[in-house]
Image 1 (tube, rainbow, N blue to C red):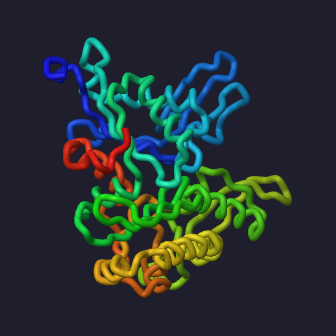
Image 2: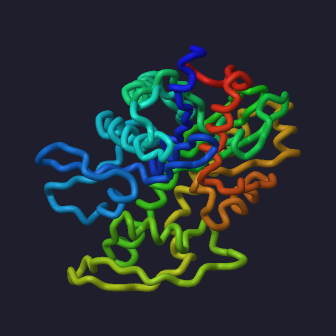
Length: 342
């Protein structure tokens, strides 16, 4: 290895259903939506990330926007490979190089992933010049990113609510003791909002609008201490076909998301009931940690806390907790060798 070390670059990737983040030299260099726009005539990828995201819902029949990842795993192999490749080319330090360097990568994957899905991630990375590819489970990466010492003989519970999956895991001694992966997360919340607007207001809204509603006034409970202001929403009236605008409040969104959040709560309770008693005692003392974009839903921490009777903490910058943890693992490969998968 020695002599060729300077030709190898280290990158950490959080390949998410909603967003892809890449860390290089301890800095987040790519933070873009996981979305690709493809020209149907030539089959060429014409845009990725933020550019492709702007096109979503506004394309004509020759352009199609694809989300290559579904429920945290690769659904479209070709598009995901091109997307990863284009994101890696965007890294400022790698642009200056004459030759594309060999890459040592740590990529995080959902804990409920199958062998076949794991191989798909690995092959995608190897095709974009990945010489050494290591995989790490998302809850592990999130725990390291939050700053928990996962190597200790002490139980920690982490809930990572991403775009495609919610990962709930109890960790101790550098391993996952019990975990549950449910396919209810940010995307399902967005679809709940679309469905609610159609059934309650006869208003047809697109994915981007629903996403905006979720971020602006999304809530998990109807009694918030500092509620957000009402929001004006534009869409198409299903009865008359005309564009129209209505005003909605956070209480309505809390109602729309209620069923999905109940299912996450049930999964949390199920994981707790499978936890060995000694670790349950640790969790009682340390509480539950939330990470991922979904944990920013207003009042979600309070709601889970009421359900479990445990303190619930949201990590700082929850969107980047997983990629931060992946980056720390990459820097200390020797220390975390036992939790990585080749």
